[in-house]
Amino acid sequence: MKLWNAAKIKASKGVSKIPCVTVYDFAFARLADAAGIPLLLVGDSLGMTVLGYASTLPVTMEEMLHHTSAVARGTTDALVVADMPFLSYQISIAEAVRNAGRFLQEAGADAVKIEGGAFRYELVETLTQNGIPVLGHIGLTPQSVNVLGGYKVQGRTREAGEQLVADALALAEAGVFAIVLECVPPDVAAAVTAASPVPVIGIGAGPVCDGQVLVMHDLLGLSESTPPKFVKPYAALAETVRDAFRAYASEVRVGNFPGPENCYPTEAPAQ
Ligand code: KIV
Image (cartoon, rainbow, N blue to C red; front, top):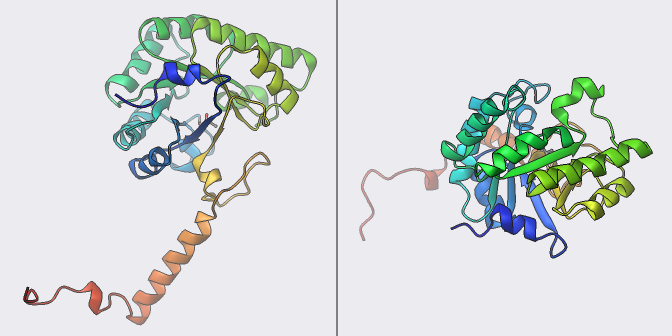
């Protein structure tokens, strides 16, 4: 049994803050898991960070299943959540259950994430009643970028803030074990967190939430572009990796690599 499950994440509300990070492959899943991060999200942000798409909209079920399997193979203790891609859960409840089930059955995920508030009530209820734990996602929901008119801060008016509280309450009642709250002012996040009976995991939502999630490439300084204001890079890996590639290329060009220590002798040395 894993150390972390959906019920344990839910029970962490008010007990301990929950760190969460996105991961997309075996190697980084092993590192995040070994670091003791309890919640690993295979975000559809992989469309941008790993696959080079301009948004999350082109990401397919097959791409998500492929990356989720790799993450699941690299994880011993953490809860692995697969992000359901655009159009995999919007068309019908039956199709959504089938697709969500594939993440658990074929890819080894422990739960799925879906975007949307109170209007997802029936879907969340059906998934959880059928044994599929659900992580909600409200505030800035990137799959709706074309409706929202861009990646903009949400919940800025009183009505919009109240709607987020209502969405969190509805999702919790429907059965989510936690809710991602993306890109809202800290006072709005504080109101949602206070009202919600399940943990609220913030991203760009200030310090008061029950947990925090960051995109791995932002956290590790692996992105080439300037990260959003809410990101704190904990390393500068893009520079480290670029320097390593340069040093390798230069040693190959001048003939310093491989050196004698990197070569196999003709005869094995005597024992
Ligand atoms: O896809 C993703 O990485 C996400 C996080 C930003 C929460 O949904």
